[in-house]
Image (tube, rainbow, N blue to C red; front, side, top):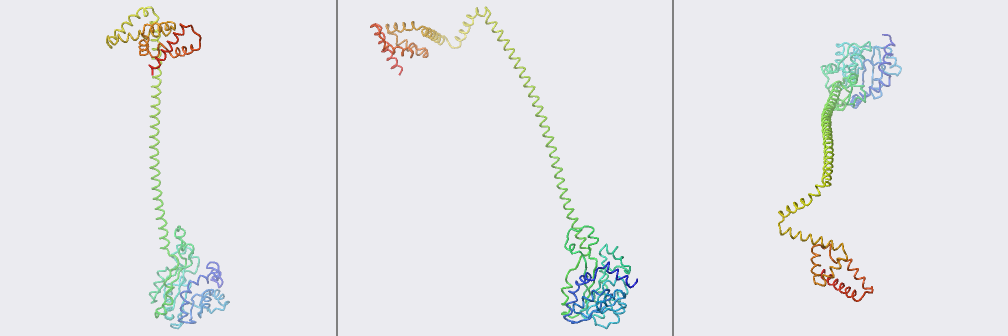
Amino acid sequence: MTNTFYRAFEDRHRGGRQTIKDRLRVYTSFVKPLLETYPRAQAVDLGCGRGEWLELMTEIGYQAQGVDLDEGMLQACHQLGLDAQLGDAIVHLQKLPDQSQAVVSAFHVVEHIAFDQLQELVKQAMRVLLPGGLLIMETPNPENIVVATSNFYVDPSHQRPVPPLLLSFVAEHAGFFRVKTVRLQESKELLFKSNVNLQEVFSGVSPDFAVVAQKNADEPILALTEYAFNADYGLDLALLLRRWDTRFEQLELQLKHFEVLAQQAFENSLQAQNFAKHAELKAQQAELKAQQAELVSQHAQSTAESLHSHAQNLEHRLQEVQHHYTWRITAPFRWFESQLKRLRQEGLTHRTKALGKKIVRKSIGLIEQKPRLRRLLVRLSQKVGIYQHLKKVSHTLSPELSILTTTDIEGLMVLRDVSLSPCSQKIHDDLLREIGNIQKGRN
């Protein structure tokens, strides 16, 4: 590759200088505390590139030196006045004295070298580091499926991906006291998202990772970086798969819930259909009963009309019989027959009394219809002394046909103001006296 190609490639695909510098600040929680033990400590950056890490380490307080094989990259370092030189990273590391460096870093270097070179790099870093010193190796994360299958091979200088488990083991095997895998550059939104989709599972794992290995030292020195080593970083594939599984478990629960609702809806539909059929049957039965009732009504009407017609026919025949001369001729016989029947039912004594009462009522009714005859009988009964007796009998047998009515009494009272002959006056006075006696008797 030409001197300018790889720098142009980095500018386009890795990001601008400030972007890379901001990403690298995640490591300050590891390296900055060591300055309390090693003020103005030395640090070496293998494959320093454009010098973003050298600049940041210098700002923190380190004496940082870089080495890189690409002259185009080194031009950016020299423009900023950074200490960077052309050379092979491993050869440069081999030349450094034992326990001379507080930090050895290799950002996106290990994917460019063979595995034996990687082991040599880690071995030499272990040698040159101070007690408690740090080795930082950052590389693309093959746990990210898109990175492992596509993005990793965009860089033509990449040889093979290095998985986190392999890189951390290399550091452990070399004798580092503790090793931390730091996953980087993931989406901040996805970091706290629980309901992930398949695309996020493929591409959402932290696209880069670093192994931060610390050389053994006294407890006070190790305590300085305790917080950084205990913190959690980034997203791994297992976490996203668990979230994916959880999403499907929730979907399965929702599906089961919908299945239950669907089953309930189906059962309700069946019940509604049964109810509709039952209602339809009831309606058919009601309609049948209505038809039967209508037939019964029609039959009853027909029967009533027939009976009415028959009754009219009988009445007509009865009228014909009554108007026939034989009906009138046989009337006394029918009366005599009815009297014999009543005589057998009621007895001779009762029928004789009833017949006598009937004759008296008829007589009284006849007298009432004849005013002159009534007055004559009253005078005659008074002269012979049987008036009171006849009055009681008349009142007992027929109170409504009393011989002396209220109208008669009022008429006699009016005669007080009329001039009468002596004989008429005497009769008038006698009648008034008898009226008084009648009223007393009634009371």
